[in-house]
Length: 199
Image 1: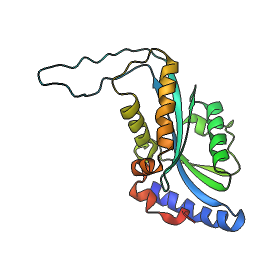
Image 2 (image 1 turned 90 degrees about the vertical axis):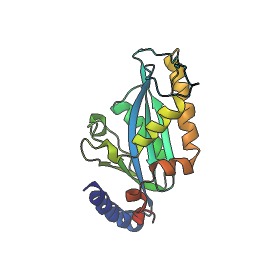
Image 3 (image 1 turned 45 degrees about the vertical axis):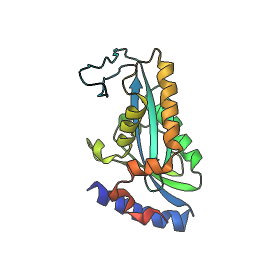
Image 4 (image 1 turned 120 degrees about the vertical axis):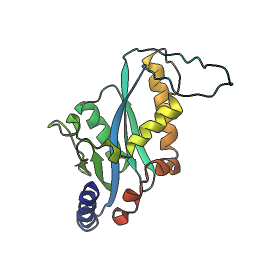
């Protein structure tokens, strides 16, 4: 159902972007995730007969990573912000718009309250398209969060939230700079096989 809705919307926007506003259509998926000082022990290698000792603590301090990916070409935009709310979403949308001024962006996002807020300032070159409710598995950015947690936050304690933010920025930057890696993580067949938006 979502695939048909997105395909129909893309078909509509291809004509609009190429004939009316002379821009290229860019399909992006967006999400945000909290990263903090609470850690969850993960599996690790150790010598046979030994039990690994993994430090763990529960400090409830968080920052939020915002990301938008373009699975077709592996482009990614990310920011680390203090909250998941309308004000921070506005900052993020403005950044995405600024990075792709020559594109018209169809941004697929979930139904979080700050994605539908009356205070949301959607840039002129962007449109937000809602995911089906309760269907995070349809958003490829969820796989980006798995990659960030696996590669940047495995079995490690952070003394301050600032240390978490620095690691998060480094991990996200490494993904942003590797388009092939992002494309391999997010380029699901039902998204990239639809080449209508590659006009």
